[in-house]
Image (cartoon, rainbow, N blue to C red):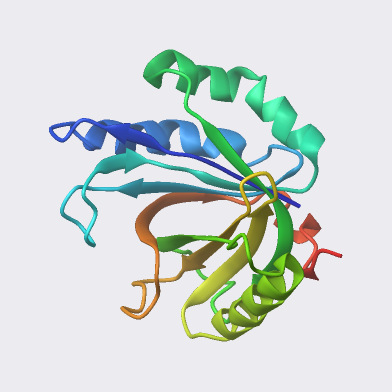
Length: 195
């Protein structure tokens, strides 16, 4: 599994209805994209849930690197580049993926929490701690799915969780509204630890 996200920060006076319409019309186009476990079409709106910015920030879980590459070099991502410029594409090696108690529901919100792995820390122990937190999160009411990834180049862990409704106040990280969810190969994503 590979996790991927690009975050497009938009001007403070940007009409977010443009993004909503874009997702409404283009979101379903990936509903049958082979190798895509899931794509959550996330947005942040300035002043909502503590967000200081307007942002379009979809999050992906891929079953294999070939599928991610097909998307990045294909017409879907080229539309993003044409309309917004070429964003930096963050990606992480999959560490774990789980479905929560609300896996059968439609998620409306998401959280993204990135944490650095300190230089002096044992990376394996840090990942084990993160896996324990993921297991706790998986059991929480309202969790649709949750994933953990790591970027060993910058030593950053990413926790991404989809929620059926509102995010509990105790959950750390950026909060997103989920406008659409594409899950063509959700059942192909390996559950649990990825090694």
